[in-house]
Image (tube, rainbow, N blue to C red):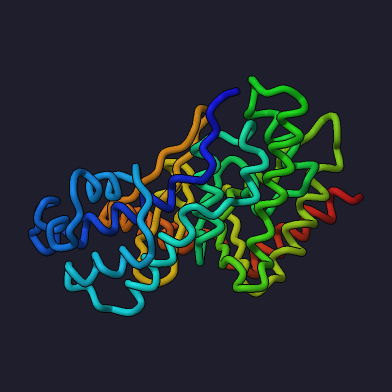
Length: 289
């Protein structure tokens, strides 16, 4: 059998990176910090590189060594350590979902907000099941019909973050108008149903939806789509860039800020929310006639 990672490593990477930053801020070497806790060998190095697990109590001890006493920071990093081994629902699809995609689902499940610019597709969190199947089949050109169906199921399951009881994800999407004109020859009602879905889901108080009009002036979205994933407390945000063969993550604070600034300019260029909803409503009505 192929080796399957039992847990997503993205939480370990985020935790290790955060601990490394706090250590560097003190000017301590790995050996010095380890000696403060009586740790031997490469334990701390392995923690920082996400190759070893660290208990929440050890996180608290390490942060004391670094002089980090902010309760919000300590709680957030202890939580990451506690959840690092937590199984996610997506592990059921471990043979189908690529590691990079599993990492993103893990990030999305932990996130407080996602800001997305989509010039080519309806965002996955807003798709109908029919649209999801068509979109997955178009992009996953090497997948079997069964795998396409499973990936569409995963996309539908992800949408639970928008209505989770413990605090729904705040989702702000800007969709290019060209996406709303897509045609589906085999299932012509797919786009009509999708437009209706957009109107319905936009009524959620945690969902903001705008349309980038065809006649828009130049804006940073011309460089391509992206998703800016935001986390509560002290945890840094992450940007996802997708392509046909996988995903790339932007994690540096300065680099992520570039995308945050770009999203603000994209929002300012797009149609206001009310005008966006009116446009989608008109297009949905036209599809019904």
